[in-house]
Each structure stands twice: as C-alpha cells, then as structure tokens.
Amino acid sequence: MLLKNAQIYTMEEEQVIKGDILIQNGRIAAIGHVETEDEVCIDLNGKRVYPGMVEAHCHLGMEESAIRSEGNDVNESSDPITPQVRGIDGCYPLDETIVNARNAGITTVAAGPGSANVIGGTFVAYKTYGVSMDEMAIKNPVAMKCAFGENPKRVYQDSRIKTRMNVAALLRETLFKTKEYLARKEAAQGDITKMPAFDMKLEAMIPVIQRDLPLKCHAHRCDDILTVLRIAKEFDIKVTLDHCTDGEIIKKQIKDSGFAAIVGPSLTHKSKYELANKSFKTPYELYKEGILIAITTDSPVVPQEYLPLCAGLAMKEGLPEIEAVKAITINAAKILGLDERIGSLKVGKDADMVICDGSILDPQTTVYHTIIDGEIVYSKA
Image 1 (cartoon, helix red, strand yellow):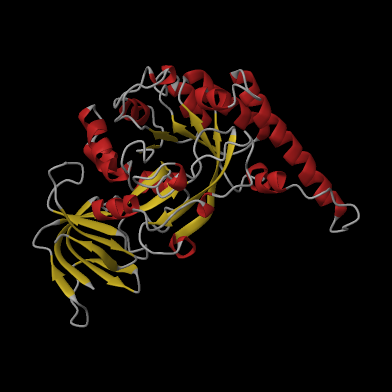
Image 2: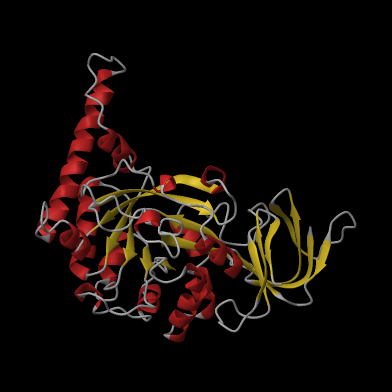
C-alpha cells in the first residue's frame, strides 16, 4: 500500500516530511518520494499522518463498558500482594472501549491491574485490533504493577494495611523474599532436592529483581513518589512513576533518579486528597526539567479515545505541540521499551498510523483512517 501526498509527522529527527509512505508486509518500507506501480495507492491530498498513538498506562479491556462486576477484572482485591496475576488474562478484546480507542487512532496500549494492591500483577502491551489477546499482544509482560498511597490503604484498611509505612514494608518484604528465593534456586544448580518450595508469587517477581521487568508504580503524592525512588535505589530495580501528580514539587529528585513519568489522568475531578495538586501544567514542568514524560488517560478513568485531548490540554498549559504529540507516541513507546517497533514513523517500524485532517491534538480534527500493522482497521464512514 502506498500513501501519497501526505504531511508526515514522524516523531523522528526530521519531524515533518511532505511526501509518501510505502507499506509492505505490515511495516514501513519507505518514506519520502516513492514511485511504484505495484501497490494499492491512496492519495491523501495533504492530510496529516501521525504515528499510531500509544497509551503507557491504562486498564483498557479490563473494565468493560456498561457492565459492573461481571465485566470488571481490574483488581484482584483478595490479597494486597498478587504479583502472580496477569493482566492478559483479564483483558476482553471485543469490548467497545477498544473499538473506540482504535477509531480515534490509539493503536497500542499497556493495560493491566489497577491500584488496589501493593503489588497488583503484570501489564501487557497490545495492539487495539483483533479477537485474540494472545495475537494482539506485542510484549507480555511489559511491567509489574504496584501502588502506593491512599488506594491500598483504603482497600485493605479493615485487614492488613493502616499506614503508608506498611504499604512500603509489604513491598520490601516481597522484594527481600524474592532475592532470597532466587539465591536458593541458583545455589541448587538444578538439583530438585535442593530447590526451595515453588512459590508462584516470588517466581513472578524474579524478573523485577533481575531488572528485566520494571515496577509500574502508582504514586500521586510527593512523599509516595520519593518512597518509590527510595525502594528502587535500595533494591537496584527499574521503575516508572505512574500518575506523578506532585511531580513538579520534586522534579529535581525525579530528574536525578533517571526514571520516566507517566502523567495523569488530569481530565478528572480532584476526587481524593492526594490529587490536590493535579494539573495539566505538570507535564510541561517535568519536560522543562529534562524528564522523559508520557501522558495517560488511565482509561477507563478518562475514556481512552480522549488521549490526544489530554495531550492537547497539556499543550495549552505550556508543553510545546511536538512534545505533546511525543508524549502520546514515541515517549510512551520508549517508556514501555517498545520504541524499536512503534511510536514513530520510520523505515522498518510497524506500520501503525493515524490519518487526519488537522492536528491530532485538536478535538475538531477528523480521523479518516487508522492503520495497524499495515492494515486499515478504521475508515470514516
């Protein structure tokens, strides 16, 4: 397939190119001036082409539309420590929320458990088109969810958690036990008689200890964010700062840590105390500090299709337009470790893109086509 006469917003060094895009075998084969007679040709007449948008933190498909408990698989709140559960087992690929996301140009999301638990389970990154989550998934797992602050305190206030101190202690305990469990497995050198008793929770945490899987840390308030940084340093693990509502207050500490921030959801009421400083200005303040940022809807908190609207509102508060687009494309892909495949328009990458008649950040812009893996999966009627 050949897309002709487009304004191509690459999110690469040469940010805007006027020309053509050749798609072959689900990937971008050429960008620029392309001449070929062997492809289906679509003349875009100057329309804009952006990379398919990427959501770095959501629960899309895990809390189904217009259904209550029957379709809510976000939190396994039987226990505050559930690293063994997997988001891929709770995602329903046929929910209309995924269709709405796809039709708006969101082509990849990272979805998984919510923030009820100190450790909630694994996230999966998947494309927003298909009927089988196994086939839609492009990285599973992509992160291990954990949470700090008010949510685990509230959910387990009548059982195991009364303070932020115990939230941190339960996470530390699990990390310590995982290190010990792994050491005993390695010392056994495959001798089944010397192996520790199988523990599914600790097995799930081994990739975290080995730095193969980041902790995806729900943290709004500055003290909770600092606790994340403290524990990350103690155990030498990778983390992302998800929500990062108070990030502006401690932006120097975040910058020094080297960790990325996934900011939002900001298009909501300040529904609890730890959201008191919630603002669309936060992405700009973190960007100015040199912190890698992405913007999140936390769908279904904000409907997934409003991801570009959230980025546009961040632009209104100072974030440069190109940086706002990066926050929902290449930056999100980098944070997820998927930037070799998605997040920008570059030869060799997956042919995921959205075609529209104006800025993707403008709510009046019309999306004409969404393309995933080189296939047109949505066209405006």
